[in-house]
Image (cartoon, rainbow, N blue to C red; front, side, top):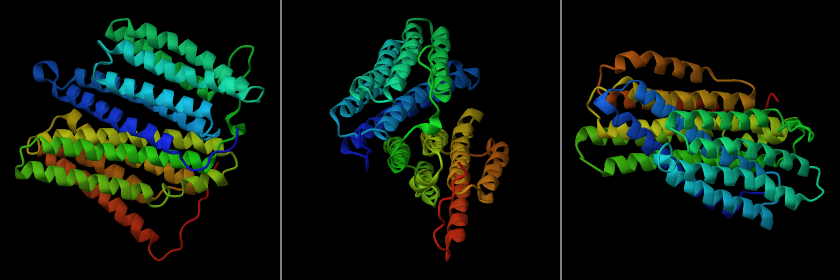
Length: 392
């Protein structure tokens, strides 16, 4: 199959499903943080957040597997389009199932996930024929079938057992992917030898980042549109929009803009591609937490907020900055001091912000991000565009 070029309309259509799915993730996390039995924000919020993260990782696994597939093979071929459409439908079903994925819709979520993950290598193994990559797809299908037993079995058990089974399933898939999808009798592969369209894959990560960033704006808009429209709520909404703008600005200046160039320049493009996948996952989790923080503060702008809420308000931007620092290293082999200074400021401000209104915490997060954006702009002003210098 030929090498893909720019992302197709079908791939962009597929991404739109994740706008909905990510809003369901935020809604579920918001519910966990605000509807704790007895009104206490303790262990229940931790376990609830962990379960929501598990669902987000599953959604990310389907998206990433599909993005890697369209970055290795011609997305205009019917088998590839079948893979994308199947993933699109399954992701939509998973998104619908997210709010009650550990109760009445557990089986719905599990079956949709397993169908998306197993059908992809099965379809490709048939379409590839005698291609050398066919053996890799067969191994992937075997491993996803094995993990699928845990997904579906777990959905039929009690909540605690379900969580354990689903964590085991994700661990199997993650470890197998890191180890080259090893299957007894079928061997394993080395990721550095995988062929990918680096610019296409980088573009897909950029697009998913924009999807996640767009979800933060949707959440802020939905939260504010519920009213009331008093000054505190208006300030919280304005700071949320300012924060989203700063997140976009920091991402694109400049590593996020030339990630494709770094992947192409790397000695082993697939290696930097996988590293960039982990980096974007960290940033997307940060954006999801930030969106949850928006909703919490817009609803309660002038109240002192509990620790778990503050973890979303400040932890979201902190996770984003940590991921963005790693992206900068992947593209330029260095990290700007402003990233670490901003992280330290966010951590140091956490304790005093527990005693102040929630809107102040949002303001601090926005100011810290604005300072990073200004530092980036000052460094780039008057200098020629910095070329990619990946360490891989």
